[in-house]
Image 1 (cartoon, rainbow, N blue to C red):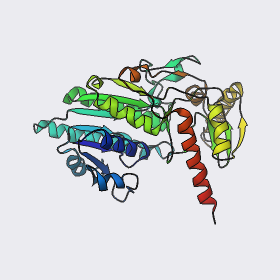
Image 2 (image 1 turned 120 degrees about the vertical axis):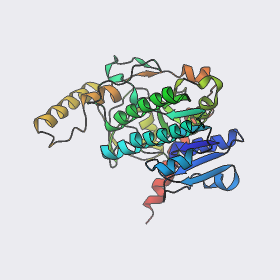
Image 3 (image 1 turned 90 degrees about the vertical axis):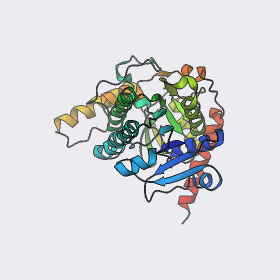
Length: 343
């Protein structure tokens, strides 16, 4: 049996669907009490997929969830934008509870076979790279945690916990790091494109490439790497082949999805603005929030290239072309906008 945490989320539900399509192995979905399962209800009705209600911060729920499981796909994590304590609890504390439940099972003579951990590009230390440098699996991790945002800090600690548990417990570990996952039902515009307020966006991405991964492509890649015999011990970036720039993405988004008002900000201006905001944040002793920082500029808007050679070496090929994925995503945003505007 396979356990999927975060299974009713945007990417998690796509992974569950791909697992159900690709094998006969039963899939168990751990879902928080009261959370909607609309994204996977049809799978529960028609295939070997079950929903178990519980939370990762509850010892009993964790033990019940991992019982009889051979492989874990761990996608549960807090999202950026919330309070640091909430992100930490949902990402780090929850992961620690899950790993402890697996260790208790191991001590009882029932060790886990494989753990597939969904990490993030946010763990890379790109702030120390020169502009234009290529990000791949050999790129060093972030070391400046004081400057990193809450999400990156939590994902770094989460990955440390998972690697330490793999070494101590002996299960096979596969770490996947998706780029910008997008598609119908996904979240808002990536911060790599710019900072949005309402129907206005400061476009700071410019000609920088976006490490896009259409949700179905990403789910397919995760399942492929997670089940591949050569996946054990691997760390694999997940991103599509046909990458486009932040400027091109935003141009199409405004034309096909939402007619946002946009102001393009050149890199030198963005860099200067980040320094000024950061300086005044310290001078005002935090009265003005550090909405833009120099670290944010270096990690989000300085510009990098991205590599998915290792993913393709395991046999992955992009099934949904980028142009088609963008069209689907923009059409879904436009349809949702029309629905919410109807009185």
